[in-house]
Length: 252
Image (cartoon, rainbow, N blue to C red):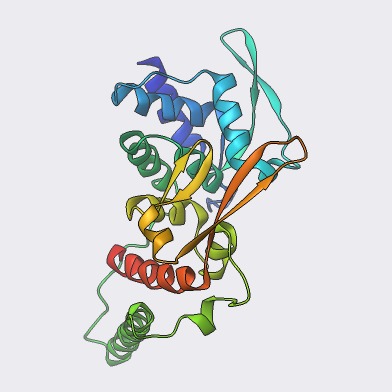
């Protein structure tokens, strides 16, 4: 019960406001994120994660993103516990490591912290000017939707728009090309069974490798550790761009 209360407080604290009541950049401490995840793990019947284990996961997932992020210590039950201050996007990336049941619960809570949607109000149709503005706005929205549908169509050429045909693209390069939020793009790849995590590395499902959408590059670190890197081929970027556009349309 105490842990659940902590997580609720974490959700409230993660949406700071300035003196004008406007939302500012939202962050969450790694301890608050750990408590939120542990609540979801408890509900799903999974064991809770110790802070040292959780910090290792954070550091493994975020890697270079933690450069310049100071690790500080927070008193918890009389002990000094190592802590990072994370953005919501970073929290989502860490949450993607969890099982499906835990991941869905954690991401739903994190997404609730994002900027609130503006509630639409009906225009004053008794005013010709207001009605005209409303019609123009609706027309622009419809045009944008039609354009997105065209992008999602199989016959549209994505190569010129998204792909540098001279080489392979990593996850972050592909997300940047598609102007996609990395955490949501990860969620999309998992939900659509395009990629999965194994042994700390992101792997593509074999059918997509066989279809020529991914290529596997192998290498060895300076310490002699062998590793595999899964890269999108130009064909793969073309293919995933269409799926991603359609995925976003369905979410609207």
